[in-house]
Image (cartoon, rainbow over all chains, first blue to last red; front, side):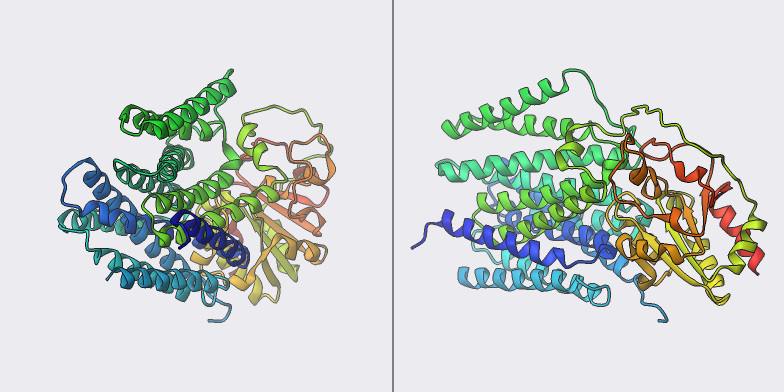
Length: 95
Length: 450
């Protein structure tokens, strides 16, 4: 069995390389939607926050988790919506 | 059940990756964003199925509050204000990761987990306060210039030492919460300290970098709570921000460390003697030149957005095309206040994206351009970057508008640009200055045509 630390670091390494490959192909014209879309994806923290907010322990970790859910949800909802709003404006000539 | 949750994360990761891939072309980008959003939905639903969750009300409260704020912000934000919004969202992402890292602290955590908790608090905290300062500067709630004071490096070094020392002590005795609080507080202070010395024209670099940090913070939080979807998504965002940061630095011919530490745009004065004289032109004369032109290029800068001139610019572009001219827009990578900002503003004004040319595409064509119209741009068209070795922007790639047959510069007055550098373009033989508010000036030209 591979220790969890090694396993997670392995995933990290592969994702970083993949990220570089993917993002390098995004044209300059889409860099603002790329950033707001990245904002939305970085709201993935919500997934980590959910289980902390639902422990029912009513201790400090619980409240921190609930606050994190709210903050990350702002990113997820706001990020995807504003990116969609921007991308809807990009039109090709003659359409 | 746990296997099912983990498998859902794999699907979500695949959708994020596929969504980003579709962002590679404006034609598929909107679908790509949808794909990515579906991935997020799957990840969130999977996380809700976790057996450890015993009550849902606080999660629901978080969702509702976050969705209301995020949704309202996304609907109401003006396209000119996108940089501020992205800065603020970077900050929220950072804070969320800080909180998750902090909440992940349980007695008996391994040293590896403690280190990742520290990292998510540190990166998250720096991202949070740094982004708030960036937001303040971009929205002009704070002075946009660089703040420098003597002993700044010493103060910053002491903060770093303090963070390292508290972090080590935290790992040694995690039960003593004093060290944890110290790390949190110092990280927040450090975020302020790293962003205040950066100002003016360097802001696009800062928000790109903070964008990257918000991803890395999510990544560190992923290690802290042992969740691989956070690591995958966080590192995709981290990589994205770093690439954009590199592009911005390259477009300004500066190294990242130079941007971060030198306090460029801090009002340094420079005495370049510029030869030649300013030749103003009236809208009427400008119209006669434009009417005869067969190839026109617009070079917009942030000033166009400030004057809200993009819609009249689009009108003028259409009239010129009806008049038989080829019309293009030349976009410098650092025009505007964040990467790609000009493109969004022009897209909002219905300018088709295939008319927007990058600097490297428009420069070779510049010699065939009859009239280059510079609207609210200054430093990105400054020929001093090629010609004046003593200029602070020497070596920066610029759009060579001075190589066009005629250049119109629309300008409110003779004040220097965002970076405060003298521009010899205004004194060139083929340059004509059209003074006044950009929106009004373009409006006058439109009226002359119709």
